[in-house]
Each structure stands twice: as C-alpha cells, then as structure tokens.
Image (cartoon, rainbow, N blue to C red; front, top):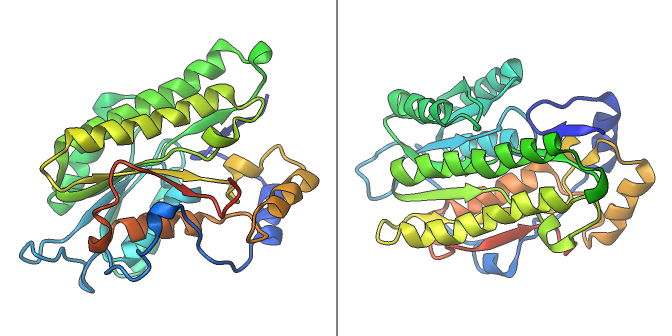
Length: 296
C-alpha cells in the first residue's frame, strides 16, 4: 500500500502533474467567508499587532516543510509574522522554508518535532516563545494518510493515522490552548473528504472529522480570550498527499468536477488562513471553512 505523509513525500511524476494542473484561479471558500475580502490585513506593515503596543506577532505551523504547511508558513511570513517552521524528517526542506521566510523580510526558525510526542510539541512551543516572545497563531497541519477498504486496512496503518492526525493534533491544540496569546487564532486542518466520504478513505476521514470537533469545542473553551478557532477543510489540492497514486485521468476527473476548472494549490489554502488571521475576521469562530473551490 502506498503511504503518503505530507512531511516526507517526493516524486518527479507528482511534480510534473502539479506543473501541468497549476493555473490561475479565483480564491473560493465557504459561505462563512463572505464579506471578508475587504478585511484588514493580518498585521500592520511592520508585522506588529494593532492595539498591543507594537508587539510582534508570531505563528507556529506544524508539518510546514512542504505542501500546504510550507505555503501557509511562507504566506504568514509575508503577512509580517515571525514564523516557527516544523518538520519530522525533512530537515533540509524545513530549513529552506525558514530561509525563504527570512528573505521575504520576517524572522523565522525551524525545529524538528514529531507531534505524536507531547514532550516534543512542548519543546516546539518553547522554541517559539524563546525566539520570539510568544505565540499568536497555531496551524495544526501535520498529518498522514493511508488508504484502503476496511477489509484490507491494517492495524498499523490505522494506528499511524490516529496517532498523528488525532493524537498529534490534540497535543498541538492542547499547547495552543495553554499558550496562544489573547486575540490569537488556532486552525486544525480537516479535509473536504469528511463530506465526500469516498471508498477507501474511511479511517482517514474519521481522523479529519476529529479536527472539526476539536475546533468547535475549543472555541467554546477559550471564551473570553478573543481567540478564534476554525477548522480548515481543503478539497483536492495539488500536493503529493493527494496526487501520489492517482492517474492522470483520475486527476483530470477532479479538475472537471471543480467549478474553477483546476485543482487547488497550496497557496489557495494559505490565503484562506491568512484572511482568517486578519483583525476583521475574528467573528468567524468555531466553524469549518471548506476551502475547496466549490467541489463539494
């Protein structure tokens, strides 16, 4: 069985597919995003938080050495955030993302940490606080995917997904609940597969549905701190997590089903998160935002 890990996947075929299917398009989100296009930027031009005496704003993104996580880390860096980049094994890629963020004008660090290990997650947050003084935005993006019918799914694969996607995200969100500063943002990453409910995706979809429940409950638990918590549910996105193991014909079928006539790109999801980090988006809270181009 082919295993896909958004922190440790490569392949020239996937790259060529991404180039073939990439194209210009219009950002599409759920109805919860209506009216936010004119919201103020996530931070002032110097990367500080309005109304907090010029305090620099800091973002931590798990699983950010590649794919959606890397695109989100880069975008938040362009928005003026100091950024903590995270990887499990792709140390060189994580270091490169951090260098790119710094080249765009924002400080960044990278740290290796397996979200399955609560001590490693605590150390990751410690590093962000020591480097930048605190944490304002957390994107719980790290995840893995194994696909098979129920009859063929192994205990090892199910346990791996649940350990990373459910427990790992919990470890990240628990630290976020303890450490994100008032007025911050927290984003667990779900998936539109929770609406598709396609064959072979059962355990993976269950692990992503957990992110939606996390967001709804955590938003209520953080009442009074002006911290907004929203699950982001990407659709078909042009990353190896989605494209590996699929034929050109299968990918073309997804393109045909999407109103914009293309796969999503990692930057599409990063832009949604950036928009929800803006000061004008704080009223969107405890929601699932389907950033899927209208495919579902």
